[in-house]
Length: 256
Image 1: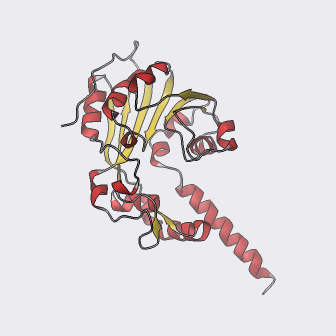
Image 2: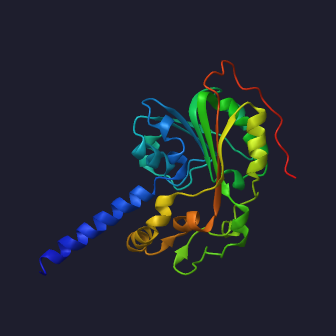
Image 3: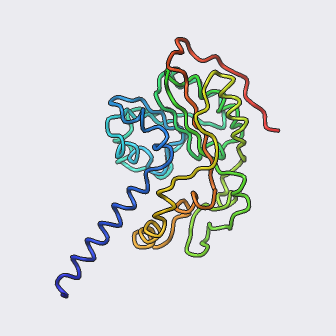
């Protein structure tokens, strides 16, 4: 029995890692998988920190991954190898987005980036021009509900990370996705989805994911409970496949 115990522990940890990786498939992949799964799919990840290059290639190894950012945030050599192209762009100066190739990408991802910028609606107005015909853009940001959630930066009930908008001191702007959707529609894009981020599997199997976080990290990452608490909201928009010319530039929407 004692001889089997270490084997059982290793098996349990392996199972938890498998569960954790399954859960790590984020909403940005769920809503763009139809395009990302195609061999040679061109994806632009705006704000590519937290090992996003490696994560993207793990789930979609045949895509071509391009990144746009002004610094390296929580990246390593594996992420460098997973990145096919890198564009140095400081989003606090939206004009620098003119360096990005137009009509070049099947998918444009902008997940938890806009809230860190000072002029987010100028960035949003420039996103449609990056899409190929039939391409999708995905945005995820903290919701207004996050303003009222418990603070967890230093830990709360075993949860650690960003659970309240102000847990992250680099957050600058609360994004109104209604304005973002209006900007996309003015540029000719179709709104596929707008609203609260919510994945059933993250709710139904939450106990297993919580256990995996505790065993593998020693705490529950705040992102584990985002779907339950309503921390984030998403916007998915698509450019028509029949669009033969570049999407016209539009004036950025203004916050009320």
